[in-house]
Amino acid sequence: MIDDALLAKINQHCDVVLSSASAAGVPSLCWGMAGRLLDDRRTVEAWVREDQARQFLADVRATGRVAAVFSEPYTSVAVQMKGSGASVRAATRDDEAFLRHHVGNMVRELALLYIPEQFARNFFEQPWTALAVVRFEAADAFVQTPGPRAGQPLGARAPEAGRAA
Image (tube, rainbow, N blue to C red; front, side, top):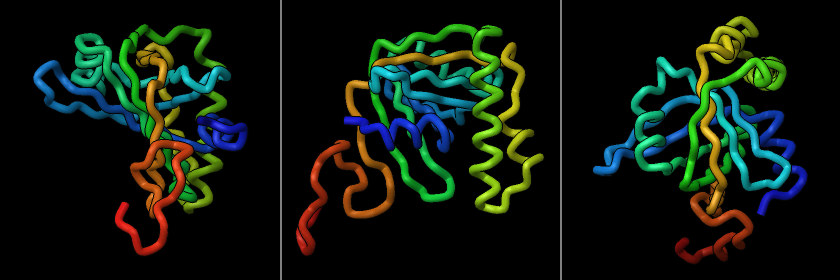
């Protein structure tokens, strides 16, 4: 499902947007401060500001359902991963080194789009004490990059030219 190149891209060049829904199906959404895919290529971890993600976190705690879209800003390469059985924990000091590394990655990535370093730092550089970590095992992964494969399961073939997707 996830090859070495995509794993590296997700973990070094991507921001993350997360979504869930209430038991009644009302959607919730938040921007992650950082995210990664673990070496098993199925376990997703994402850090969100608790004060900006209250409804999203409540929905994850109530339903266990979550989707994460990892997007590389410069290329628009994007992958969506969905799962259930998600858990939420408070971030700890052990998360701090990864978070600092992610900020550096995003500063470099956004510089390619001429976004000032200070803007990137103001957005992504958050104190670990303000963050919660959402963790889930991805059951499904989809291509979200704009183009003929958008929305297809990761690894599926592109539709033939002239045929409807």
